[in-house]
Image 1 (cartoon, rainbow, N blue to C red):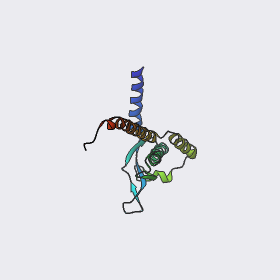
Image 2: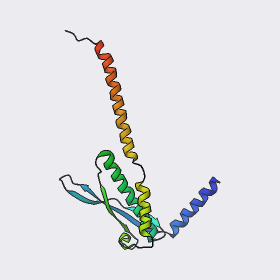
Image 3: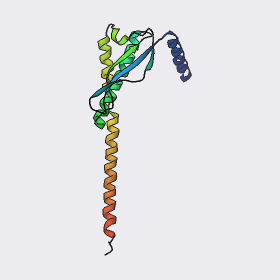
Length: 158
């Protein structure tokens, strides 16, 4: 059964690659400048392969939402985020920014579904930071307890 499933997945990947178009996803972000103010920057291009513009757009939108969620989680857990995602480009094989041109039935509903699914995920970064803080506090308390037991046994030379 497992082999059959892997074979079906492998065939579908090969088939979809042959029938797919290539798109370039470029995320546009904003970060604080070293000298104050903000700077606009573009992240490295990520290749997206999809059968059509609509599917490519939804995949790009999902990547963008994930970046927004990570930025939000970092800000919540660490107090800041290096880059805040602002927008994205989705460049097709002809050089057109599909993100500006895309419009299809139910686009708003599908985007809302993607956004809701991603932003309903828990902040695992905050959990990790909080757990590490708890461990540090526990270790500190253990050290203080050990010191309070050991130190009274030492006498200073007079």
